[in-house]
Image 1 (cartoon, rainbow, N blue to C red):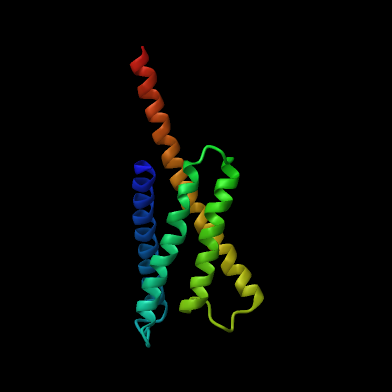
Image 2: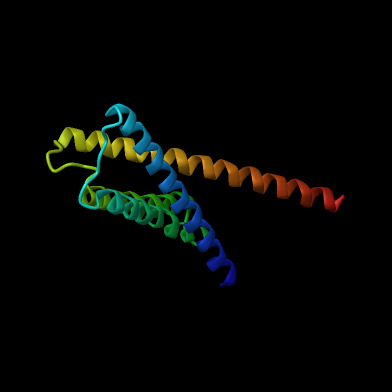
Length: 145
């Protein structure tokens, strides 16, 4: 139980940090696109920062599903990414990342981009942890000899 809580806190901190980093980088891009005239009024910046943290939680907390040995890996990924992407979409509409005038085509494009980014990040973490497991297995095999 203690390991699960430790893993949950670690993944939550990492995911919130990543969400806020991506938010800051996107803010820089928009600032450049708008020629330094990118302004937010009515606490929109604060709402967006809070929204980014919630998105981080939405992707970080469901990682506990990977601790289960009962579920197959594809189901774990669907649960993790499904929860994260739904939370991202709800937050995006709530804080104004998607405007009210978004067409269906624009919504589908944004959803596709969201899924690609989420899966790229997931894939990078999965590769990292796979490499770590391989290193640990090599050390275990070396200790047996």
